[in-house]
Image (cartoon, rainbow, N blue to C red; front, side):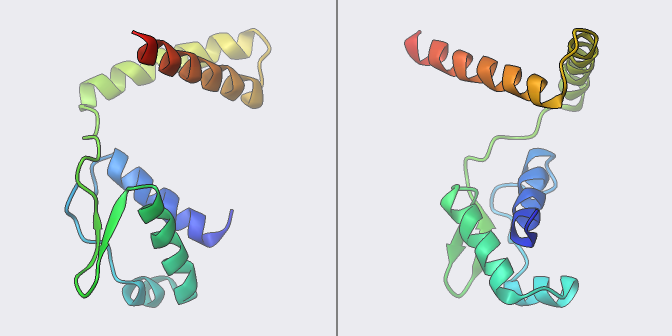
Length: 121
């Protein structure tokens, strides 16, 4: 996976788990370059990707910030409950002979169908 996508995924994960919240400032490109010894263009590409997704907002002269309206992380109890249900589903899928790609295809289909149903209702 390209380095810039690794950075993008780290920020996505941090917003999902609550490590980063709306309004939090990301490190500058210079700070990331110094910490990780990567090319500055890699950091800029990651930040551009995050901005195009609406996850961050760049404020010239101030920095790059996590955008407002990012969903709050799940409560730990709900996260545990969902994880238990997911683990059981995965065990059933494996028993049925599905591999990772088959499981992901089925999950994506269910997500798409639920999105369509939500828009119709």
